[in-house]
Image 1 (cartoon, protein in one colour):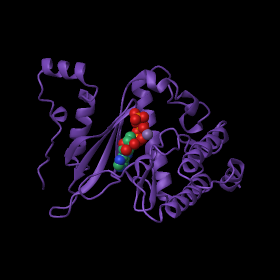
Image 2 (cartoon, protein in one colour):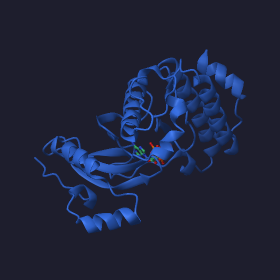
Image 3 (spheres, helix red, strand yellow):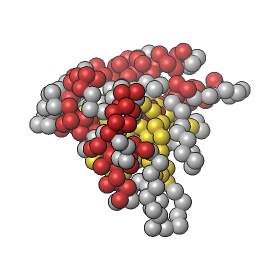
Image 4 (cartoon, protein in one colour):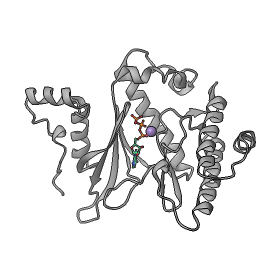
Length: 266
Ligand code: ATP
Ligand code: MN
């Protein structure tokens, strides 16, 4: 078996208290003791073997690259680990997504931020599972423990993550045609998500779509809601508007929002 190799200093827990404090003061990226324990447990169980640096550090979550060696001599598998932050403030305005969400009636204790982040991680895990099962391109969910979610890395074999659609370098003679086909592709994804997964993304934009080789990948679905959520159609209209605006700026002759809305929902 491969020896678990951890490159992230924070995971080792070997830092002195003083250094730890200093790090926390200078950077938000330091993992707390609980998160380290969860990562070590996942390493021991073989879900990941190495945890690498951050792919993204945001308000609500950090995403780390990781590698697993499932077989003795098999190739490494690239993974992504999303660690939700226990920052109460950024989760406050997320209440509107959970209110009316029948899957989370009991657990949604307001004010308990540790329970809240666990809830968001759970939501993302379940939504990813549903979206992935429906054949929509998204990270395959692998493992969940409290506020730590392990998923497939959308990236190349070296572990470089695909760019967000916003940063995709689409150029050349056929770029106009590529943009048009991506727009059509996204309409199909939204429809399938609604009709088959019974979900509305609710934060769909060029920032939460990754791009590679003429293929779109949906990410960041912790706030996605059931189609019978009281505000789901409002969120869907917002998704349609935001993505439509983006494709229009890229020169695509987009359909009117209400036409897209009917295409998705009927
Ligand atoms: P925040 O709002 O705090 O920035 P977030 O909730 O938006 O975090 P995500 O959108 O899920 O978090 O992830 C942040 C970034 O990490 C994404 O924009 C994407 O670049 C990268 N990322 C997330 N998941 C994956 C993945 N499975 N494979 C490759 N890259 C990923
Ligand atoms: Mn995001």
